[in-house]
Amino acid sequence: MNLTVFGATGRTGQALLHHARANGHRITAHVRDAARLRTAPVTRTVTGSVFDPESVADAVRDADAVVIALGLHRDRTTALYSHGTRTIVDAMRHHGIQRLVVVSEAAYPPHTRGPLARTVAALYRLVNAPALRERRAQDTIVTSSHTHWTILRPTLLTNGPTHRPPRPPDPRPHAGAFSRVSYGDLAAQILTVIQDPATVHRNLYP
Image (cartoon, rainbow, N blue to C red; front, side, top):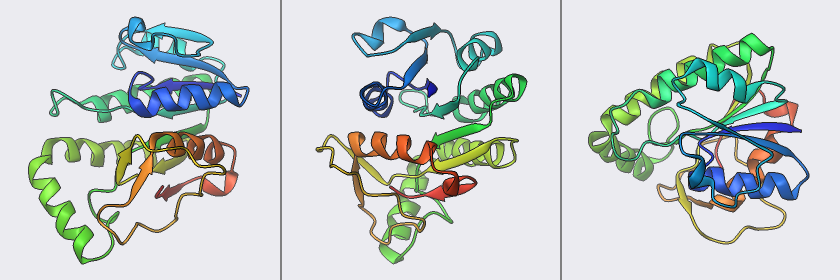
C-alpha cells in the first residue's frame, strides 16, 4: 500500500514507519522538521505544518490509507487534534481517499470500563482537560467524516518488545486502568487494522 503518516516523528509514528517498510509498504511522512526523521525508512517526505492545507494535500496525494498519530507535548492547549485532523480529512475528501486510522486514547467516557479505570481517567481529565477537549473535537471530526475510519485507543504505551503475532485490538474498553501495549505492537495492529474492512467505523482498544 501507499501509506501517509501524520505524526511520523513521534514514537508511535517511528515504530509504524519501520513496521510498514518491513512489510513492503511505501510511506509518505508529513513532518514539520525532516531532520527528526533521521534514518527512518520513508519513501517520500513532505515538510510542513498539519495546519497547512497545501502540504497536507500533497502528503495524502496517491495514498491508499492515511494514519493520524499526532501527539501534543509542550503546548497542550493548541488545536492540533481538531484543526489538524480537519485539514487532513478535507484533503482526503479532495483526493477521494477513504481509509483512515487514528491513534487516540482511552482516557475519557465512553472509553473507560470498570471503577478503577474510571477513577484514574477522572484524575487524568482534571490534569489534561484542554488536551481531552481537543480529543473529543477530533472524535467528532473523524466520526462525522466521509472516511472509512477506525480509531485505536491505547491506554498506556511502552517501549516493550513487539510480539509475533501481535494480539488483535479489543472491541471493548479495557477494564484495567493500566493496560499496556508496546509501540511496536501498536504499529503492527495499525497495519492489520488498515487492511481489515471489519474494523471500519469502530473504536478499538489495543
